[in-house]
Image (tube, rainbow, N blue to C red):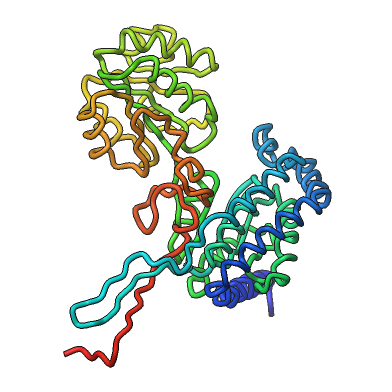
Length: 423
């Protein structure tokens, strides 16, 4: 007897198999065809904006019944302005260099062999994400541009929006000579489908989860293929003894308050004891003016009594809110040790005019990105020159930090000989 789960397993396997077949054609597709698809999709999105917005309105209407709060509904909502921004992002990706076929290194060996290493696509990428419908377009664009087939699985709260966006994108593929299955969307909201797909390592080459920590941990635990991920962003700003205090204030306010709900926002401020008495009152006033709640250690509260007492749990928490943990440290070494103990390996910053201190911090802090006299908010693909990103990785293999087109490729060794045999 065929059960409903049997049917779901078969559907998932078929979806992944189709993506694998498409990936083989995409791997050798000319850059001109991929760029044509991106530009045609941008034009089609503008032309069919009403269709997408109507679907999105139904998602937004249903959102409170799914338990979404105001912030989540805001992330879900599309407007004419956001549709234009999504279309423009497709055109921006079209303008980026194609990584496929790039020669990373080349040499002639003493025996006459010509050896080179070139970039090639990964194959099939399974993207699992929540809330934001724009991720559907971003992920599809980056995967296809880098020669990869994409399987997209957004959250149930955005299913209508994602289906409408996917239809716009997939309708333009055949006209550009690209397989219709280059971009597929998981058609069901059944969570079991994710588990079935995560087991298909023979078809899917990489899984990328974007969303809350529980989603990412589930994917990491169940996936049979590699996973590109970061669990959370517990980012630090360390203000050194040799810091410009005005600069440090501007940096911590930006790092914490500009967009507190993102993974590269600062969660902890560390201040060298020698400048804490002058710096903390100024920084506290600026942060409190942005409605940031400060949770300080004993030394910080002795200087700014209005701070809430920090608990041990605060040092390891990613708030994703206007809350900042504050501690006074005795030295640069103590600051680095605090970061080693509590950091999630995402982004750390030092504010200092002491070049030796900056070099020590950069060399000894082991995170995906380390900033000197700059906000943690700059750990972003667009800000770091990638043009676009599919996510940020705190892993060390195979990519680390913001991941753009190049990070969606691997390499292949190519060797030309002239009847060479090995002795």
